[in-house]
Image 1: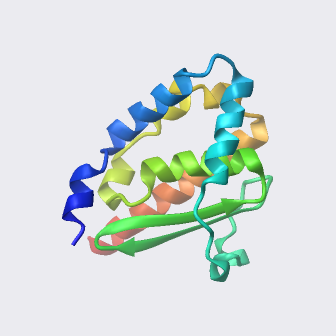
Image 2: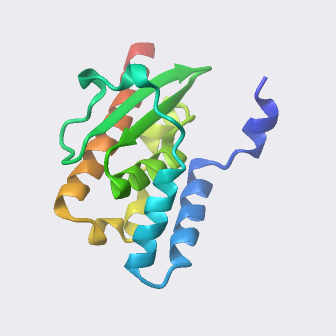
Length: 149
């Protein structure tokens, strides 16, 4: 049973606040980009069986694969990109949204995106990719809620 880990786990709001605090530590955007790249390097290995076109996200300039699976009432996301900064964006999104209930995912706006300045400091193509990833994550959660209704 995961009871011990569930109580140790930060809420989505707490996770967003922690991310905002981590990014506030850096003085300039070059340091923040490097931090994003470092976060992306720490992503868990992506299962090879998911590296197929059906799991590739549309709307991203780089290649991005995203898969959500339901486990014990929660959605666990796996994702990877061939681009370093995009992998970092993935790491941040998974930290906030993966292993959450569909209700939590749908109800939570990505406030951290503006708070850490991603909305202002990403190129237009990366911003589109971020939007595509958020849309896919929230869409998968909404599909779970619709199926349960």
